[in-house]
Length: 283
Image (cartoon, rainbow, N blue to C red; front, side):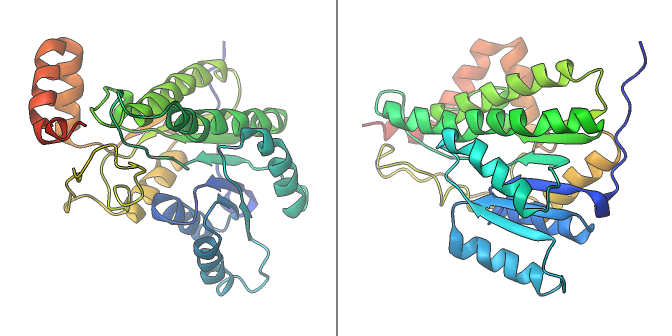
């Protein structure tokens, strides 16, 4: 059996599809891909914000043909097929050669008070939408013998956290699906990249849908995290060097992963004690 062929990225010939590309890490991924010369398609919900991103890039791109955007709520997975057809048509028949599943829905709440609809939406955006996009994008990549899929997961892949079970569960699921995909594409010249971005500067906690489910608790902000731009550059460098995984999480995350695997009872006790203020706010 021949070893897996490494993908060579010629960015000027690539078409990158990025979900959640209007802010944060998604915006940084758009700009880094654009600076490499690729065609970019952005899928996002915030029209005003995505227009700003596209406008800033079109000011550089005199032909105004390398960046396109589509508005879509990825929770509506039944619409993804139509969305994908529109993307290909708008990009002059060029199918995406790199799919970056970055969009995420972040919901907080305890298992006791988080509505089933919140769980359903978390799974729809964070798990089902990436699956649907992969199913539409991968056949053409396999046919062309060239392409790649990047799935953005989180430290929630290694263990869950109190107060955000729906988010953690959806990321657990995406991580498991990615592992299967990596094995299933072993014979194909398609790169799969699993990314745990760790903590980075973003508006994650501001965008968190909590619906009052945590009462007056507010998650602490971390000021020493790397920038979204640094994370985006690390992702493209990982693609260019042929990596299959990229873990940018910090030492605390790694200690937690180790403890959860070898000393699960101790880990759960420490995790609960560390989140005692959150637990005291449980309705």
